[in-house]
Every structure is written in C-alpha cells, then in structure tokens.
Image (cartoon, rainbow, N blue to C red; front, top):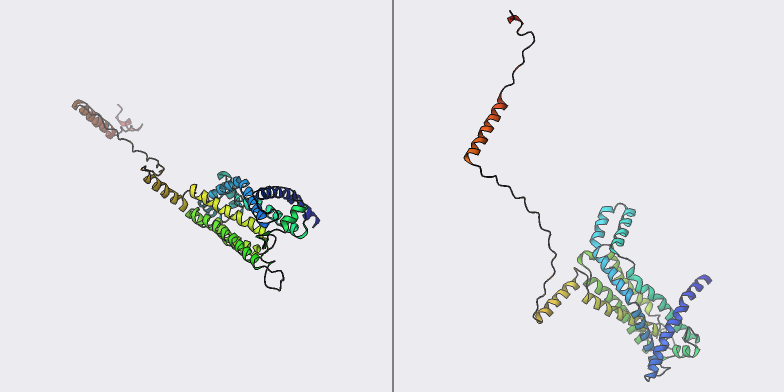
Length: 350
C-alpha cells in the first residue's frame, strides 16, 4: 500500500498545483465581480471555469479521437474481410489487423484518451474538495484559509458544495439530512448520465456508416452506450456537488463539441454526411447557385482493336494471286517419287 500511495501522490501532486492555480484565479475574478469570496457560488463557478480550461487543453486529443473513430468506422469492411480470411488463425488475424491499423494510421485506443486523461484530474479534484471540507487541508496553491473557504462554502447559503446525494439522504435517521442537496445532486447525476448516453448515441446513429454498425467495434460501442451511463449514475450518488459540477460541465462540452464536428465534418457514407449534403444544396438553392456532387469517374473500358481493311487490288493482281494459289496447291498435291530398290532393275541389264 505504501508504494501505491507514493505513486498516487507522485501523480496527483502536480495536479493539485494546476487545479488549485486555475480555481484560485477564477475565484479571484468572480470575487472582483462582486460575488462573496466565501460563498459557494463563487467556488462553483470556479469549478466550471476549471472544467472549461481543461477541455480547451484537450481539444487536440479530441480531434485525434474523432479521426481515429472515423478511421475505425471506415476500415470495418476490411476488418470483416480479414476475419473471414484468417478467422481460423487468431495469431495471424491479430497480426494482419494491427498491420491494417498501422497502414491506415488508426489507433483503436485513441477514443479513450480524453476520458483516461481526465480521470486523474477528477480524483485530484475529489480529494482536494473532500480533504478541504473535512480537515481544511492545503493542497498546491490552496492554503489553509482558502481550503476552509472552499470546503465549507454553500451555494445560496443552502447547498454545501462538499455534500453528496448519499451523504444528505433523508432515510437512515440522518439528523443533518438536506432535501435541497439531494434534489440538486439528483439533477446533476441525471444530467451527467443523460449527456453521456446522448453523446454516445449521437456518434452511433449519425456518424457511423451502415457497414460499421455490425462487428466487434460496433458491439463495443453498443456496450459503452449503456455501461458508461449506468456506471456514472451509480457512482454519482457518492460524488460531492462540486465534483458533479465538474463532470456534468465536461459532458455538456463533449456533447456540444461532438455535435459541431459531426454537423460540419461528418464521416463519409453516414447519415450526418447525407444531411450535410442536403443542407448545402438547400443553402445553394437559396442563394441561386448549383452544388454538384463529386462523382468518382469510372475507368474507361479498353476500346476493341480496329480491324484492318484489306487493300483494294486490280484485276491483274487478283489473277496473279489466283494463279499463284493454284500452283501452290498443285505442288502440294503432287505425289512424291518412289526411289527404286537396288535389286529392282538387275534383270534388265544386257
């Protein structure tokens, strides 16, 4: 456990400084704008600002994720061909599949990068908020005074930013139960779950060609469509309000960003691509221009060889050719002369 704790601290310590620096910067900004420095609204908006900064920094990875997902969709017919050809040999199938990924510049794990990189930030924010609320513990640039203000802040003076749905439950005889916290936490959990489901469903229904809706990759996407929302929904009841704000804002950003990319740069052969073509045609018709679809020219079939016509001959030339043909035929039909045997003409000698 000591080794794992050291590794965790090694990873999280730099994140504490980054997260606390961004949050304190936004907190000072909102305080200058007139919000209470110890109020939960200033800290809640600071968490939202932190989320936006992180998502802006992850845009290059998101673009890479979109490209990888598109390549994965477009190469599904080739993957199916490899499965039919090498289905009996798993090792050869894996080698040929990896070669296909390499040749097409596809990384099957790129779609998980934004989520994987956000998980350490998520845990760092969770620990920072949890320990600030319980013991006013300082992390990074968040000193004890700011940690106390952050951990004990309440949104509108009613909803503690460090409380959770499970912690504020009204059942079980909890004397500190807070119905308002439960309602806000429930709304955020449902929003987090719904945005996760909508984002994944949007990708599958609008930006996946028909050939990619079957096979292992499609099955994986269908599993994630239901597994991720359920996982976030079950875990969300234990997350503090501040952490729920971060994750819900991040999901809303992802949904909007993906909607923009699918609408303006869809994958070829998808419903989104067809919808974009129709929009472009309607827009062009409105402005009086004509949009022609790009058609790939078929290779021309080879033309048949031109039969060479015989030259026209004179009557004398035709007669000469006929005589030559008759002479050749007679020579071919002339029987070969038999050679006499040595003893054949002996009796005739005088």
